[in-house]
Length: 512
Image (cartoon, rainbow, N blue to C red; front, side, top):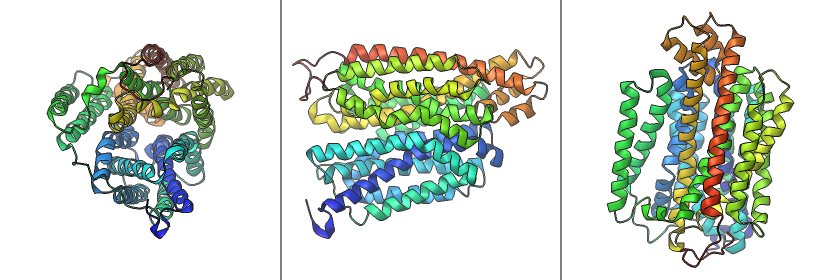
């Protein structure tokens, strides 16, 4: 390892670690900050419910669908180069978002920001692996995961304080500032590295995979407004299915596929892919949906909503570390399955909360959900590289990260569409004279936290009745999430709880 320009010194490595951790910090800040700011953005810029939904989903979609491609680009063209370009673009777009003239342009910039985030995280992680070895590398990546947890835990609170003191535009200025600091600390000390064996990028696979996710997500988001049977929605979903089939065919025939489908013949590998999906349904969707409820429907300030959400996310700072320690005595699959069961109990407890009750009643169920989700959260990164053939650990990690982030965008779209449909169904029994189109838009506005817009659309319905219709729909949604979380626990326990045998193609300890 070179020591020129201080690259090999411990101090230089620490600055590089700090820079990459800061880049990891702004990603959950962008994710949770955008969710907390959505009601304020809607009040300031207007925009349709679909456009407001894309504030979160546009970022998650491009970020998740391009992670594997970004990792391949970093190997070919250089980790430092791609990290530099990614962070620079991320920072510039964050700055531009603060001056967005409309929700449409904000959505476009959020999509570009997701591209930049994928480049920065993939290249930064690869560069970090080149700077540290052995236990030092383990500690470095543990710091990276902890930083991501800090962003999730305190992102809503930080966004709430910024919106309360200034306005929603300050959230994006804040992420731009962190991006500048990350570049100042890291770029002068980071060395350029490449993979000499890298052969390029699976462009056909990348394009069909990204298009599949984009069209499917767009179709699900558009469904509550246009109707599931509308030609637009059916066309989007059908086209996404065709592109998915094309993607599978491409990956089966190409020499160096982006996604090696043969890995899915290992049951433990399939079980690991359930972990991020389960945490999406029991945790990530609440990080986005609860701020919209607290601020838009129940009338809390952004800062009060941020304080409440600390109860949900703060366990992510501690529980993953505890989970990693417990694997000395307890199988990681068992811990993950038990975590999902704990989260399911918290979700059911949360469903018992009635709008208007003291907010302190929310603290314990949200803490329980955070503790339950934190157990698989702290173990799934390590499991992702330990449940397939050892020589394909890098690809296994890439598939897992894509499943995690792309799954978040898809899950959010599905859950938001389901909640909007449930609200519309409840409102149809209240506003008997309203036409379906007006009901659909009002339901979507309530779902995105725009209660004022819903009241304007349905003046014949009193606001308390709108709130009651939303609360009943949210309670039913929590029941659905509880069932999915329990099913995730069952699958994980069945696929990951057994001890590894000699037939398993992995050269790592059985207890992992």
